[in-house]
Image (cartoon, rainbow, N blue to C red; front, top):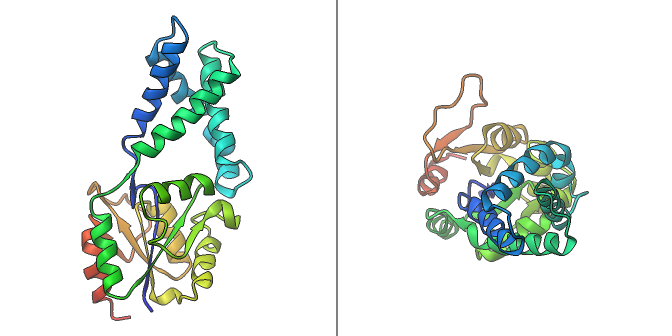
Length: 239
């Protein structure tokens, strides 16, 4: 059986509206705290993430820092940068952001037709994504994709993150697949293409913006500008 595994964020899920979720929380905080400018809250949130992310990236990806805990931590730091120390407001900001985040993410328009065409052709479809399991699986459920993909492998659940080949090996073995007949599609050359190629999978770089591949960057087995091209690409592969 030929299988096609996908990355999630930037490949299936369009998160370009996520800044709207931050601005929504900022507006809520400004309503609750007189004298606070929503723009100040947005700037504080950006600064907080710039400082926080290098410190917690590995813990979040590998599951030792739950997504909900990280969300609260980030909003607590954001509010403190705005001279606000109110734990009730931290909880409200965190919960509001999660709700707005669910509304902000959506599948790219080419996702449903591509999945349908691949499934109709008899290919098995799955997912390999980095991140906190509760957040990534929430995205799949909110978008109606949780039942469409099997296996679903999340880095925090297996203790390995892309580009480590272990996370790809886990997906292939769990599903009873063969690396040589398994494709992996992702938007990141250094994470998705490197990891998939290292595990013996056919790597496809989804280059939605049409940007040139940088000099010295990993070379995928194939490059596409849209998932619309994927069913034909897989069908043409002699293996």
